[in-house]
Length: 115
Length: 158
Image (cartoon, rainbow over the protein chains, first blue to last red):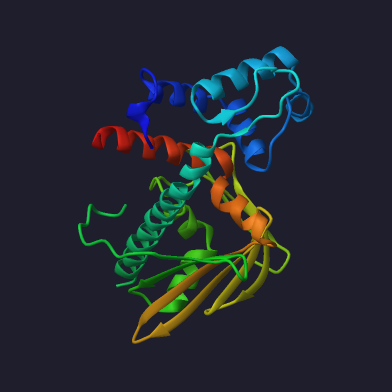
């Protein structure tokens, strides 16, 4: 992640963008393929201005990209964000590592209680 | 909860693209009957399922083929891990469906230790990619939380 090459404090943009459940859901939708504003309005039951506002926040965070015409141009995950997808596997693995560490510890406790 | 062990045991992760399967492997120091029990009784699952180490807010297990299960973590009550059991074959095999994928827990024992394989089989390569992108057990929010944590670590290291 070339965060230092992005404009001022991109992390706070990213955190702000990811902090909202609707925007996370929009990202999930775009991970499955690009979509226009009108295509996003339908599943999220939001007005065009509301969707556009969310998209603007995601764009500022560098997570998605698209044209200037907020009403027609399809949006998609930004290539940089897509590249970072590969990095998401590591948190996934770590999540399972934590879970199975818990299981390991729990099994030890089970054995001790038997004795 | 797991102690802050430095030489923590490792979990293997393999992505098998040909069979659209994510395969996690782990050796645990317990006979497989106990491991199977830990996977299938609510009191035990509740104690270890949440990676955050907190007991589950809700853990319902109807342990029979076609029976439903539902694990709800305190940190993410909005995204339960829920599904249906397909095959219950103690002490070696447990098969379930959840979140559009098939989960298999395969336990092999040697010298009182258990080699555990957890497979998450998706229906297509596209779904596998989607699954990895979204995070397997908690959907988007969890994965994006991970991304945030990742970004924080990155920022901390910079």
